[in-house]
Length: 293
Image (cartoon, rainbow, N blue to C red; front, side):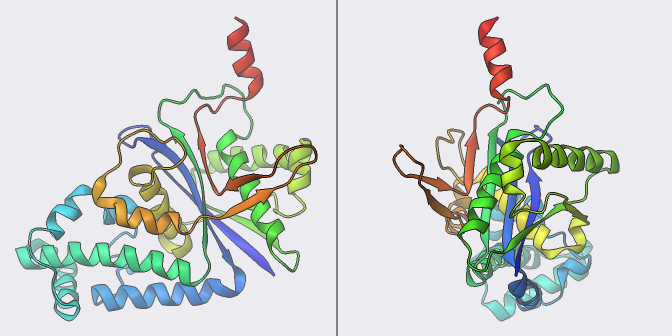
């Protein structure tokens, strides 16, 4: 038995997004195909056609931008059958789309994301995230960043809680080739050369897989969740304003979090959530050197 952690990012260009988010979804191997089939069925049920074949990118910034909510609210909600037919017509001939068709497509996008998150809950998907303020100090060294280490830590705790001694695989959205090599090397050093990494390698296979996001449904789920965390979820001291129209979907994302209780000798038990909010990406040595100067 194994679990697969599909990872994607949001806000890493440090332009408009209030937070930089590394998000992942953990899915048990026996559930993965059934979940994918259910999501594809939802595409056809809501849009009238498989949109991931190229008609529409299933990405957070495409499905959930502010314009989508503005268009969706400009007319009352359509009945599902009518919405499906109007949305399909809009997708198939967007150049001559009517106001009704544009409205129906926007409503369909929101309905699809909600259904996507509902299906994740039904198939016991757990969401993980490292959330970094856009102004957080960045490290200077060439090593695995703290946001990756924190996420792998929580993934390790999750695997350790599962029965049957499962292994965890890590699957990334493919980066530019040189960046892939850098990440592979950094992960290798972390899992081989640090005491903590060596311990976690007992559960998490250290070498990641890379896939094309537009061809991999589970990476698209991670992308949507990363976007919703950056713009809508507010937990653990996240102080930047959220978009209020995302609140219901953000609540669905929060329901997918994992929580565990860690017991340590000589210390009180403490709760660890699968979402980590990080205000400084630098290692302790860099922070201490700055303070010393």
